[in-house]
Length: 138
Picture (cartoon, helix red, strand yellow):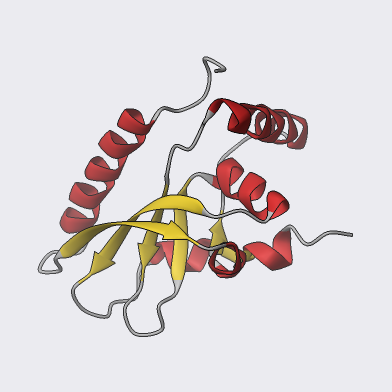
């Protein structure tokens, strides 16, 4: 397995940090932590957010490393924010992993933060569109 890949225990630690961060950002809102298996059609509808600074070449390189690591059992979950009312899923971490899952039309594990009530989150303004629209095959 490639040493630059994020491991499940690292992702779970990040998930717990994000939940605590969101609790501070949105006082009075509780967050349920849920582990789910996203189906390929659910992945297509996830709102893709800004993945951070990186060149397109680096992104493609990392996607290839993840794709190659699948045969060795790589399956670190992604992190999503799942809105209750419209069940809109917003990607918080795992941009390259979901690109691989979308391209290969496979399911992927996710750690989901689910708020206990409806609220407008700032991250929603950073949505670039649904994964299917961003990564559709040309």
